[in-house]
Image (cartoon, rainbow, N blue to C red):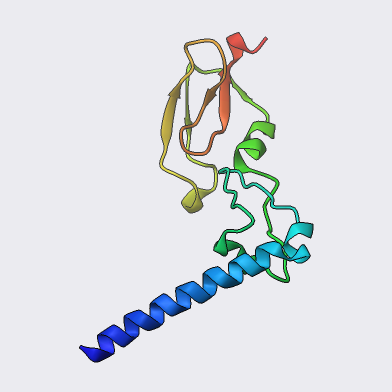
Length: 124
């Protein structure tokens, strides 16, 4: 019972120490000099947040090329048929086969990989 109390007291002291360190870091110029990049999910922490401890002596790395932008850069595939299937195009590394109906005008994306298809009659 005594060891359980001492373990919880140690946890509380550790958390208090982390918060004090975070407050100290927030006031230093080192943290202010680095831009806090926002990720594609909108993740952003205030400068006094203790989670910024992981970015001491290194910068926050954010991939600027989001997958949705990379898929949008890919050209739309023009197809003669009214129906088409997409399996990811990579054999065992692709995705389950999806059939796509192209009867309506406009491009139609695959629900797995985002590849877009359009019927030849609507491609003009």
